[in-house]
Image 1: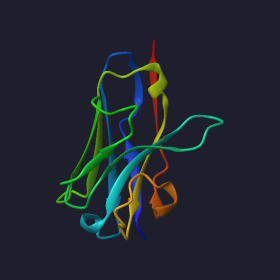
Image 2: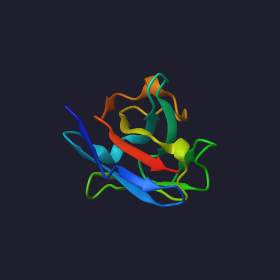
Image 3: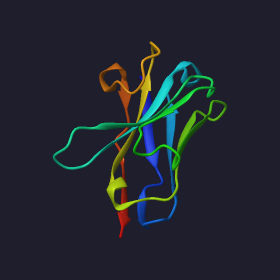
Length: 125
């Protein structure tokens, strides 16, 4: 069973930076498409970023494009999300997710098979 554990969330001022990490275990991480999603109370979980198994292809939601960077280290079974120029509207619980059988589709929440427990990111104005 694949397990995903996020870390690195916290409180940061608007304009600041934060990096959240996701440690994967129990599966062949290097073959998974990985993604980051976020959720605020009362709203649906939304797509943030996605990275292919090799790291060669990355995709971003328009709201974070140019500010966030997704990356992975397959040797360490780690996924990262570097968040720069943070805004109060980036405040959310951030989840990492793994797609065992990539289809090439981007940001489709129900295609992801495994989810972490989430880490809170709060951006103060």
